[in-house]
Image (cartoon, rainbow, N blue to C red; front, side, top):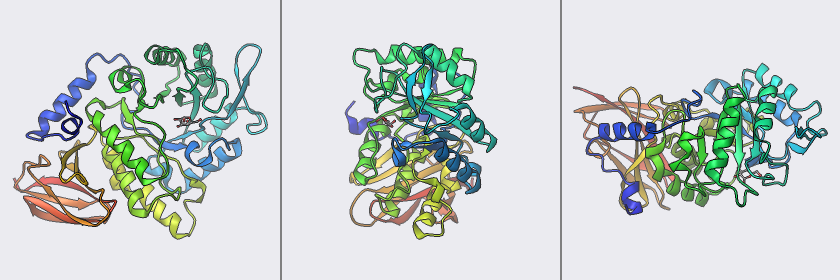
Length: 399
Ligand code: GLA
């Protein structure tokens, strides 16, 4: 099917689409660790801190998330990305950098748990991580056992230095090792979409990256959205497309662009892993307030976390810069995104027929303006800023 046709879903009946989506996703699935029934939420060190990670940083981040409203809004996993590990001991057990993580990882995981949060860690399916630290190849079961003994709740497994290794086989081996560890551990597959993970990863992990690394730039968001939106039909509770971690708050995009980034991730039922310095989220600066308004927008988070677990889809793309997205939700409402990719503001319309809303009228909530309108009939029209969105939730009414 040509890409454009695959991306734009004709919504004669959204109910049919939802049924097909759920059925296709479940068939043949062998991975069900009972976790990630909604897309995982949390924070990851990589986008802002790169290799500059330490126990002190992770503790401060956990403190901040418990105090600044993030934990209460649903952000759960505090994940250290690459560079925490330095070597293996004589028995092959992975060793953390003792300068940056004095006392090792277990006390740190305990600390994160004491804050009512969960703890995540990173490794690589190949011989070395992307930053050249020891990878898990050949140590799959030992590493899974080690993580379980530390109290790890989430493992992200990368794909650097994996030449000659079959992705599907190796990630299945890691899945089995994690299951065998006896501890419930969310499995995040990170092979950047290189081996068509949407075809096999739902039976292997809880989430899988669909693209290369995000960058803190508008074009990067667009590129990722163009790719990841194509695989909407594969997502389901326990198994999610992962368009990469958030850049919201890192400074490279405008307020409207960050709102779009966050809204699109919610529409795509994507994992919401904050990637900024959340220690400054409660600051009294304008930038911190803008970042808070985005990361803590509960209306938008509720769309992402909806229990129906259907990834939103593009239903209108005409002209190509003006996209209408729809995500059906468990209570019979629909999240609708009017997304203006153009460089000028534009009037855009959510037409009931186009978004599959079968009702005489609707109640509409604007999820960024936090405003409700009732008695809407046939269509809802709004002005959408350049590179911006109007995000709506529409409830059928008046039947
Ligand atoms: C890869 C991953 C990133 C990050 C880095 C760490 O590039 O895709 O998300 O984990 O490695 O080295």
